[in-house]
Amino acid sequence: MHNYSSRVASVLTVITLGTAIALSFERAPIQENEPPDTHWYKGNLHTHTNKSDGDETPEKVCEWFENHSYDFLVLSDHNHLTLLDYQDTGKSNLLMIPGEEVTAFASSNMAPVHIGAIGIDKLVSPVVCEDVISTLQMNIDNILEAGGLACINHPNFKWAFDHREMLATHGAMLFEVYNASRGCNNMGGKGKFSTSEMWDYMLSNKKIIYGAATDDSHDYQDFAPDKHNPGRGWIMVRSESDDQNSLIKNMEAGNFYSSSGVSLDDWESSDRHIEFSISQIDTFLYSTKLIGENGRILKQISGNKVRYEFEGNEGYIRAEIMDSDGAFAWTQPIFVL
Image 1 (cartoon, helix red, strand yellow):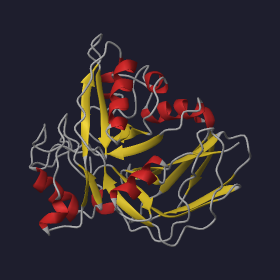
Image 2 (cartoon, helix red, strand yellow; image 1 turned 60 degrees about the horizontal axis):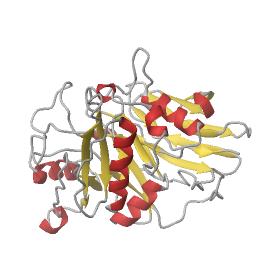
Image 3 (spheres, rainbow, N blue to C red; image 1 turned 45 degrees about the horizontal axis):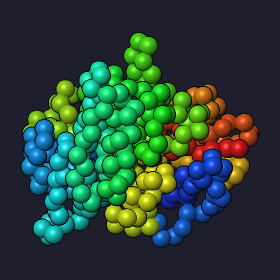
Image 4 (cartoon, one colour; image 1 turned 30 degrees about the horizontal axis):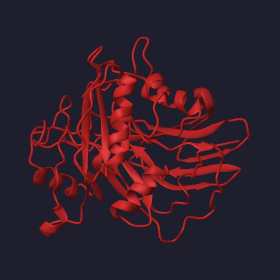
């Protein structure tokens, strides 16, 4: 697998990435123009250090992300709140958001249940329940109680659970539509949904949840296709500032897109259409799928320019963009009544 971190181009002109959505599933008003005081910030929500099962110190991990133009980072060690005020060292402007990967399992079948706890103000101890749904819900509740944003991690890791269990929970606003670590089975398998198919199932059943891309990095000393290296998945958040509260607020509202190497140059949306451009890299080709309710392909477009006029029967619209080198970007859903 390539290290795609160097392929992210600066986002130049962006007009309203996503739509704020009321919990009633009604569409909130969409702004035609991006507020002048918003910017794009690149971050990773899932990485490990030697405080759990990573191979580098927190300082070295932060240094890697700083050197590769990330704006914020969550150190998400297993059941450990790794606190490092990297900014105070004077070495970096990299914002550290406190986090943890709450690592539990269902006792009935030993299915791993891992949930990212983003922006927590205290350690969240894992809770083990008999079934997956209860284990998910108890740990999500504890993350929220600790002031955090919950992200359900790699559901297809060891084929632990799928859309059915996630649909039965509440409170988690994010899940990993893409985890770059080996063994996470993003594409699914025989009789198993891909993470994109899980997402469409949940959205089609009126569950508001946003798709995050992460690298789940563990390996910093040896870079190879079979290693869990950094820089293979991230999110781009549109925010008023790069402070923790603003970034988390915009993640929770779906004001971001996810990427493993594709960048968007601009985005415009109204109550009638969406339109965006894709940043050109080398001679790569681009293909975009506009996806609606029940995973229906609404339109497939080749090239850097994408425009879609709403017909009113889509349910929701999200985009998956793939380049000819195999990198992706995922936009968050816009709901159409």
